[in-house]
Length: 449
Image 1: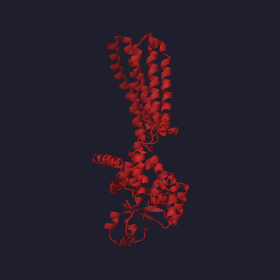
Image 2: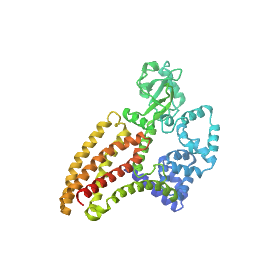
Image 3: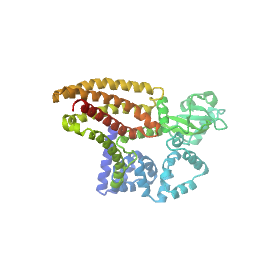
Image 4: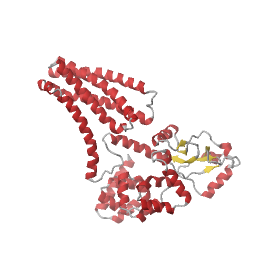
């Protein structure tokens, strides 16, 4: 909470300084900020203020800030920078970080960066770029310390002292054979606490499992969570060591997944600039509104088939929203549960049928409970026993349909290659609205009018 208040205050302070045209103080204030704080400030400011703040950022910080802002903001900042400025900013980045932003850089800048690198760094960058960014290979850092199993711990310690530092987030040193095949790891604590005369092979932990380069970022996050890892080796299909992934990269994945799930329900993208041009934002959102319009028209068409019935009994129009709302809420509960289970890996092919059966039973029990409650309310409200029975039956039917839809829609969408978090709620709403209206008005047409 304190950190949230701090970043909020920082945005307010920077914005006030920009408004007062106190650019020197803006520069001084940013000089004491972490790159992540500066990135947050930039994302929180409208474009005209953002441009001023960007000019006040120290040159050796620009690369890290570009890495941390979302895609839309990064693109806008890159467009405002000259080639020399972009090259200077990118040269300060680690190889894995450079791989994240290099696709956004102009081709001339990319060519210049590659020419300025030595052969080893260029090969490291190319090894990361050959994998999609949402895989372990695309996330990995190739800056690793590797050991041979036949050397002594004393030699390793002298090498580290000669080197002068360890790569960030180093908790394990990886051991490879002469063919670079991954054999295991030695923790830094083991290196420091065992006798220097021992060989690496004698303290080697062969239980450390590697992550293959083609593993998806979602699965990488699950592996880190399940095994409480700080870092993990990345290998190819032949178990040749390629690099490592560290917990800071995994935290970014988890946060990105949370943002994606939250914003997808509204048809938004976590990489969109909050202050993007009005026309651009309108165009992006209009697509989603158009999809929702089509689903609403379908529900309205179903209602239209019973317009004569509604005209004869106005109470139906009053009660219709209850049927749709109850189904929508019940379905959303199941949908959210299943999507989360799919994301965490707890919903798998072996337990899907059991989960669907459980959700249907919940739908039946909730349907019975709330059909009695709503049916009684309708009876008391309109003094019509038949109307109470019909709306109760419609709610029971709709809650069962909602349970089936909420449990199966994410599974079907995933099989079709669609994003359940993005499309699931729209499909669910359509099904529950159409089913609820059809059941309620159909029963009313058959038994009331």
